[in-house]
Amino acid sequence: MKKFVYILMALILAGCFQVKTTVQVKKDGSGTLTQKVLMSTEFMQSMQQMAQSFDANDEKDDIFFDEEELKAEASQYGDMVRFVSARKLEEGSMSGYEAVYEFDNIEKLTISESPEEKLMGQEPGEIINFQFSKGNPARLNIIMPNDELREDEEFNEDDVIAEDYEDSTEITEKEREMLQQMYKNMKVEMEIVFDGKIVNTNSSFQSGNKICLLQMDFEKLMEDPQTLKYLAAHKEQDPAAIKSTMANIPGVKVETAPEIFVEFK
Image 1 (spheres, rainbow, N blue to C red):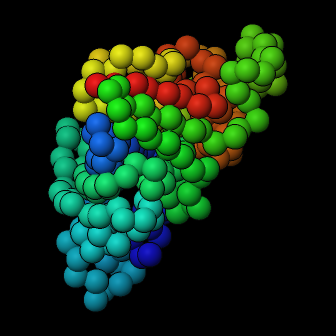
Image 2: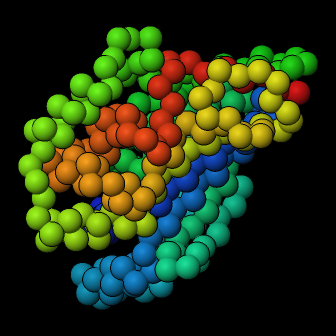
């Protein structure tokens, strides 16, 4: 619990982090779940010093990496999900960890559509469910949470985005710099990788043997003046609400189908 208090403080102050969720599925329905979390190394060091100033008896050399806590989190991903391994990561100016879990039946796996919410100390978001059928080809159905907006509903993207931007005030240079710093290096990704060749799918974002459910690179989005205006006007929204609207901005990948199927062999 202490780890998440520190992380929450870090994100409130900085906001820059990267979270990548990868589910790998085999032809028998078993597989692995990998959670990769990165934050600014410089900022993590600052938070480490802050944590030690709060608790002089805390001798942990890394408050963001606790293997015992990561082991305990296995049960949060569903029945019979088991911890496999965890390791520290350093990638450029970012540091963090990668935790791997395994499961025998993907139908028992429960993952949030917004994995970054747990990192921010919030309750997990809506759950993504899975249905699996063995065979040749095997078939996986990914059932997304029942959000208000889905692809089968009438939706005028131009009107909604235009309305959002019209309501947004012009941002100052100082606000622009603040937003660019706040979202620097911030990225959220979720993908499913299949052990075999995908032969049929309705996924909007297939690449080889994997599909993307979510990909948002906030630093790249900061290059768009319209996006900056939107984030300035909606900076107090939670990440899930921002993702829902940002799905309509070019360059962002957000799967909007209520159910995605993949057949692979």
